[in-house]
Every structure is written in structure tokens, then in C-alpha cells.
Length: 212
Image (tube, rainbow, N blue to C red):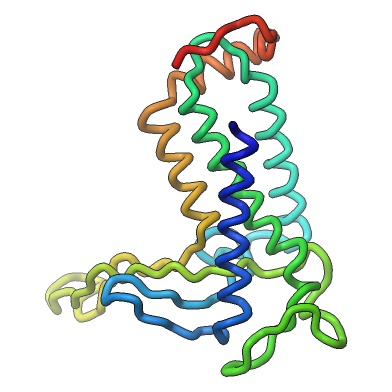
């Protein structure tokens, strides 16, 4: 189940990213509705465009994190009391992280990065825009739900425009957020059970039934 969910999310994420990458120029904004746009940007760092570490170290860290999550899931999959929804949440987190890892590892080699309004091509003559593990993550989901201007009398922000929701993300990011949300709201106890079982060395005994 975990593998199927993860594979479906990764495939959907990569289909959307490759379509956007090869159909939109960088910065292009397609308005679907007033509150939903497809806007092509690239993220060179962590979530929300942060750049805290060396790119190679960041990509390697993501790979290690996904490997640890997969190991954890495999170790606790037979723990009594841990519901299937917990594993769905974990699968969404792993899939989201893996989807962004694909961009980092491969996209710099597969695609070029022409100046707008030119559109990127796959496997360009002369090579891609960077080396292995140095690709940029493709983002496109943009939901400017509403905006307003702060009153002039407000300290620090008076007269400035505020937009909700201004961040641009992708299917993989959404998968991670949904998975984390499910864990926090519904499966925190399951996580505690799984982690406690792992600490005791009782994970994946193969004989323990899982509650539904």
C-alpha cells in the first residue's frame, strides 16, 4: 500500500512538473481562476525558497531523510495498534520528499534553462543547466485567495499590500503537507506506538495484527 501510494504521487508530481517545465517559460503565470494560477518558478533551496546549505549537501540530506523514513516504515509495519491511515500519511511524506529529490538529482542534467520567454527543452544539445544533484525544484501551484492593503495607521506594515496565499508550491510539497497534517491531527498516537515499538526492538515482527 505504501509503495503504491508513493509511486502514484511521485508519478503525478513528475508529470505536472515536466509539463510545466516544457510548456511554460520561467515566470509565466496562467490564470485558471482569480484564486488559482499556474505560475512557473524554480526553487533552488529548501521550502519557500530558503537557501541555508550547500546544494549538494541539501540534496544528499533529502536522500538520507527519505531512506530513514522508508526504513522506519518497514520496521514498524506490523506493530499492533498502528492504523493504516498512519502508513498512508507516511507514504505521502516519503513520496513528496522523493518527488523533489528527482528534480534536484536529474533536472539540472536533463533540461536547459533559457532566458524567458524561451521554453526549456529536454536533453538539450550541449547539456543541461547544471550537474547531477544540483537541479532546481519546479513549483507552479499558486493560490492568491485574497489580498488587501494594511491601514496606514498600522505599525511596520501600514500601507503595504498583504496577499494570502502568496507561496508557490508543487504536488510533492502538497503531499508532504497533507501527510504531516494527517500525522498531527489523527495519527500522533500511532506514531508514538510505532516509535516506542522501534525503541523496544519489537517492530516488524510479522505476527502482530494491525487495527483498522
